[in-house]
Amino acid sequence: MSTDVLVIIGTGGMGLAVLRRSGAGRKVLLADFNETLLEHAVDTAVSEGYDVASQGVDVSSRNSVAALAATARELGRVTGVVHTAGLSPAQAPAEAIWKVDLYGVALVLEEFEKVIAPGGSGVVVSSMSAYMAGGNIPADALAELAAKPADDLLGLPFVTGIDHPGFAYSAAKRANQVRVQAASLRWGARGARVNSISPGVISTPMGQQELSSESGAQMRAMIEGSGTGRVGTPGDIANAAAFLLSADASFVTGVDLLVDGGVVAALDTGQRAKSAG
Image (cartoon, rainbow, N blue to C red; front, side):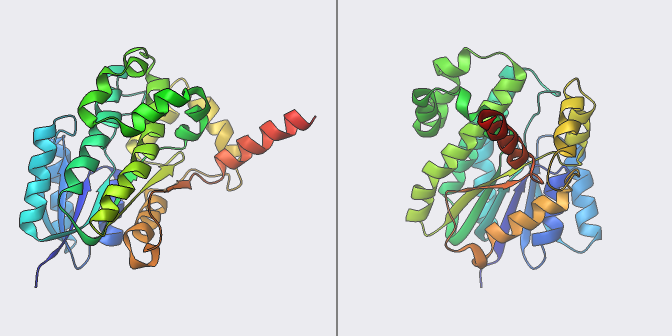
C-alpha cells in the first residue's frame, strides 16, 4: 500500500499547527527556505512522534519547487499540499513580495498539479488583506494575474508598476485567490481539489511583527471592532486547513475560506452604514 504524503511548505507557526492537526498517520514532507527553522521544525515533529522528511525549498525558483514536488511523489501518494510560506510588508520590499507571494504560489500550484493524487487536496494561504485590495485591482489586470503562466507574472505591467510593499502584498494575496479558482479546474481533471484560506491577524512571529510595525495600531483597531475581538491562533488556521484537506470538503474546490475573526465583516458593515447615512 502506498504511503499518503502531506506536504507542508513553510514551517512557521501555521505550518507547525497544520502538521500537528493533520500530520498523524501520514508521511509529512516539511519544506522551508530557512534551513535553521526547517531543522528545528523537523526535530520538534520527530520528538512528537510524526513521520517526517524535509527538503529546503526556494518557492521563487521553479527548479526548486519542481524538485520538492518530485521528492513528494517519490515518498508516496501526494494527498495533501499546504502552502503557508510568504513574506509580509514588514519583512520585505515589494519586489521580494511579488517573487514569493505571487510567483511562488503560482509555481506551487503548477508543479504540484503534476503530482497530486486523485482524491488529494491543496490549500494555499492567502490573506484577509486580499478582500481590502480587490476593488483596487483593474479587471483586466486581475484576469491576467489569474490566467497568465507563472513565468509571465513578474513581467506584467500591473506588477512592475507597483513598488509599495503593502499594496504588493494585498494584490499578490488577491491574485492567489483567483489563481486557485483557475487551478481548481486543472486539479479537478486529476480528481483533486484546491482551495485557499485567508487568515486575519494571526499570532505567529510574522503576525507579531506586523502588529509591531507602523500599521500595527490600525490592525489592533480592526481586531477590536471585529465580531470575535481577538487575534487568531495558528490552530484556527490549521482547523480550517484540516477541513479543506478532508473528505468532509469533497464538494468544495476553487473557493477562499475567510478565517479572520469577523474583521472583514465588520469593515464591510461599517462602510454600508456610512453609505446608508
